[in-house]
Length: 129
Length: 144
Image 1 (tube, each protein chain N blue to C red):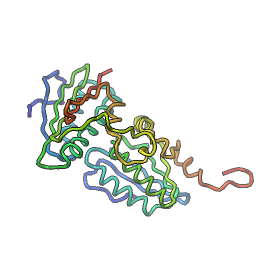
Image 2: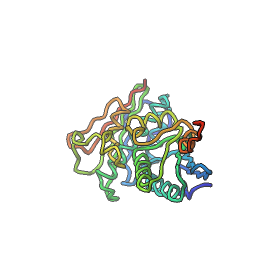
Image 3: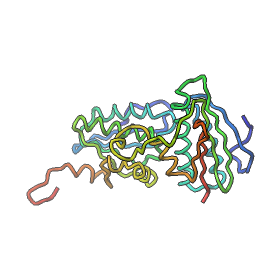
Image 4: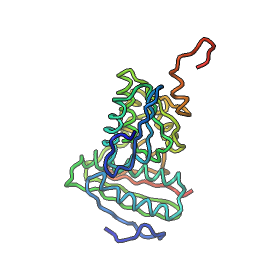
């Protein structure tokens, strides 16, 4: 399912509701002048999502500090609601950006969607997830 | 505005573009500068660094410098060569002291949605210089 997009938007959000949680795929670029619409679309997506909420960034080609701010706001909003947000598969350039800003310390970053969703599963008697 | 085709690989004189105080309107100028950068064979990482820093500088000029006042303008000047990209971003604001901007990477500022622009410019570029007044920044990225 695609979240409502802004016409001519350089980014796209696709929402994939799974039994274990919600995966939001971020694609394209969050560039000049689109941070506000990115915030609005992302907020609309997470407000109806079931936790854990996984932000999958593999196809995110660019994001500026205003876009990072939108991710921070979303993280804090979800945290206040008791919802877990995890970040998955940032490309090398985005991973470096998260490291330089130390936002990799704020966000829970995972290597894969499966890993991010698996973290919340109850552990069975044998210790298997 | 100087009439240079920034998509061509030419070591021209400084090109000047004046844009309105509007972030989306600035995208055309940004794309023009990035085409010039790519034409000079900058690596993908360097292009990313220039794009990010340019967006941060323009955003600061529009929001903080000109206070989103549409009657004011942002002036871009750039000179791209095979060796380095030099870009000036100037606003019509009163200026500021960049030395007083706090570190956004430590708590409690880590969880604030803004305040990372200058730190990112400094992290990604070879030089970030402000004029004495603090309303023009010079961005330098070497092509290495």
